[in-house]
Length: 640
Picture (spheres, rainbow, N blue to C red):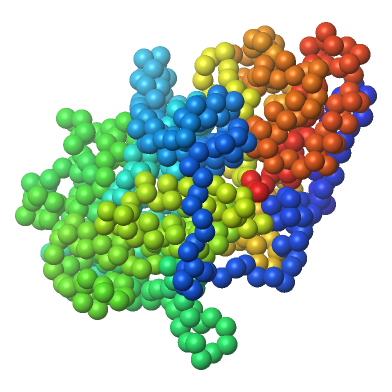
């Protein structure tokens, strides 16, 4: 069993060992670090919704942070971590506080990912390098650079949440350009409308290739003979992959929900809740037929019908000799998919339009019985199918709960879910699916802003990427090159954006630690002995060996990302103030007294007092306290 040791010092310094087995760490974490092992092992269930019972849903949320700690807590939820400058910026907004900060963030220029890759590609071409020298880690480095230094932090955090819901992954045949283009699409639509986002996701070539909608064709065509005029027929049927996942993962889930996210009871006469399925195999089949006929967005309009053009359509960026553009610059990886033959006499030749299709059926459904009639076009039928999903009553609570889990807490109360879902259904101006309003509702909810209104289990585990980003932002990380360049950071964190092992992301939203009866802790699903050990060694190395006072460490190369301890230098002779500042940046003032006492005792034992002029011992004093903090369950859990 792995033991997590918060290694405190070197050169004979006494170490304060926070020795916690992985199983104990999970037990502590699911209880938010402070409610130690109480909630997880208690038979007390999570509260039921008061919305359904006519409850008011709590007192109004605070409008602005009254302390630096409150500002840091908000920024922990809304960004990739607070820094001293971002805390001060939020406090300067005064009484307009949170709302003004959100307004400013939404208006910030958007960080881009594809443009810097194109710049890199052009530089490589000029230097005579292969176009294939651009790899996924280049995109990952750009992503991390934006996370650390981007001004549009809220957009970046929301886009990251979207990437964990609408999953595509480099663990496939997707190339770097597709990934960057896909992430650009998420950032563009982070504060738009969910219906628009759903269509953008559906038609993006990365999603089309990842979940098999690209070149998905109507049934009845021979496997090798794609001539739609041929009499050759077989039992080939449309791929059902995207049809299933758009419902299961991207919109409604598998069980009918109340507005507060609780499962609807299909039979009150039976004991317990009897779930009602949201869709059937016939529904999957119907959507699979809708999602046929789509090909590269760069396909030329055919002048004549040639069946092999389905797989090898002439591209608008082909050379005069008919050669394909290199995949790093090809438009087919950047443009939204379009129906093959659109705009020609052969339009929709591969789209299944001959028969009706059973889609989702629910109260007040716009299609009678949820049936899409025969006929229509690929584009028109897809629009009606996405509308059919968009207006399903499950979308609001399903998406609201997923968003809440990614931003504030793994275990939102039913009231919290209902309030956010209500805003998703109607933003106050009659608009459904407004993501701007939905994000505001999540961050400004009384449970998110007022500790007295939050349950004891409020919070969530910091996943590896978040832990690294928090550390780097809090300590003003940088390099002499001015860029983030760590090629193997994904190996250190064992997690990276758009790099999940499957469409189910790195963890499931409903994951519970084995010893937790009712408390969800999704991020713990990816926590293994290897992952914890590897990440902790990486963080330890950064804190102890890649940190500095003043300028950059001259012993490091220009690409090394180094941590700045400058903000702590004036506090070297003020142990309590030093601990308080670290508490502010990493645990937003929530560090329990007993833990602070341990840190102060560690300071009292170090050798800085005997060597106050030694930069080694100056750095060691700060490094010890930071390392003890970020390696502890107190920091691991974004909680109370």
